[in-house]
Length: 608
Ligand code: M6R
Image (cartoon, rainbow, N blue to C red; front, top):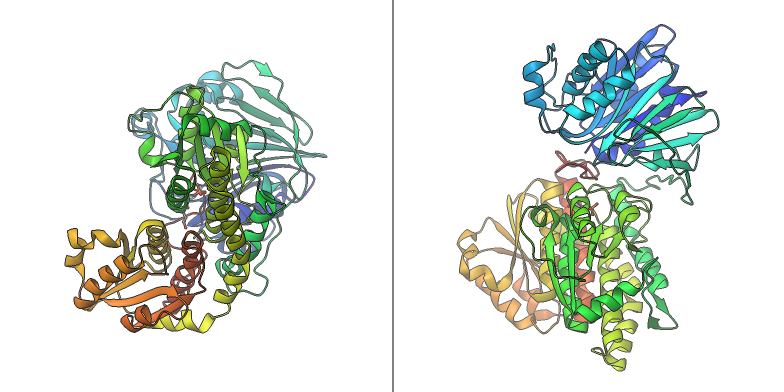
């Protein structure tokens, strides 16, 4: 989950690298580093922390300008976040930046000479290259030799003091792109690094090597070492310049953008008051789902919770059987993949390693893959056979908010579309559901206007160390998401259960120190849920309930009541996410945490 950058060109590479690192630090912000070929020789600068700390350190070094260099943002896998473990790693004249995991690092370390100055698996690549270089006599030869020796997943960029104005890049797994500008060439994990300068890109495939020789020339090689021609793609994407627009954190800004995100999704899939799912290339995939009466959905984290919501709505409105899996589990069990049954892979970033591994499994069996991504041109978006988009705009906060909501609304509309196609959803029910959805953005605005309520709720729970989130049926996936937000932002223990499961064990946890966050809007499970919440209250749990405006029963049961406007239960569950996000956000702020960069996490999980 690191980000890598390389640059050769007419600009000051220090600025290109630092600006680029700011854009990819969502991939890891525990340490940063760069190496630049300056007139006074190679300068390698590394620091713990995010790009601000690195920039300060670079400024203190005095002149550090040069026309080529490498940069790296790290999320620690092997070895603690420290300057020694930060990239670039070095073996004599060779410098390496790496994203991924070298699985045979220990074996390689055992026969390479070192000296190894870090605890990382990445440093071994620099030494492996050096060893191969000594045998082969060329860096290109050393690259191919090293590829044959290292095992695992990687995107790697290399430069050497002996090879002025040259960069090498190769990958297996994580994304690695080459940006082709006018008299400048970029290497990067993410197009956003070079979009301000060029829209021309070459996507490296696993096993391929890029060899940049100066600001105008790049050659590509297959794993076997033959020179190959690569297609240059002209991106239609825009450079995403985003700032906090006056909000203290990106996450808060993103929470407040949710009504607009919902409007984007509605605009995409509702035409003339009816649902018309817009699937890019391969709309036949929905007919296939209908024919097979089955759909797999696979994802991780919040995207997985959204997938669970998808199961409830799709099964309810279309009677299509939906199997939902976590990508990290799915890839290692022996799933029974029915012939012709498509998979929907959900990923905000489109770069989550486990989800990409699942895509590969389906592709190998020639099964159709539909993606739902927020980032266009991401690895998932490029690899899928049919595409939908979250349309949430850039999401910077590590804790997903608006992309999650957009996913829920997209899945709700997918459910209606399937129900409409197979005749399971009657015209008038569909009409009512669509009308209800059209009111959702305004209802969200109302919830978002009540800031003080969330600040007060946060004040009430900030001292508590444990949280249980409860919901039933369609509210259960939202309980899971609420607990995840609380965990990620406050570092408090939070678990979610279907409310009816409490008496089967978790009730033993409840005492006066336990916050119980219950989702109780009016629905077919309202009374049952309230009953379960009463049981927790009888054991002295502190009830914070999210329910329908004017619900005196739920309000009188709770220590704190957060209300949402009345609406259809398949949509009130979506409304519940706003109080859940805001309560976690304000609790984290009250505890003094950095909300946008929670400890130990990264936005894009590009390693297993
Ligand atoms: O980019 P993806 O949607 O594939 O990411 C999946 C998870 O890593 C992500 O949802 C994670 O759980 C978030 N930090 C949740 O807030």
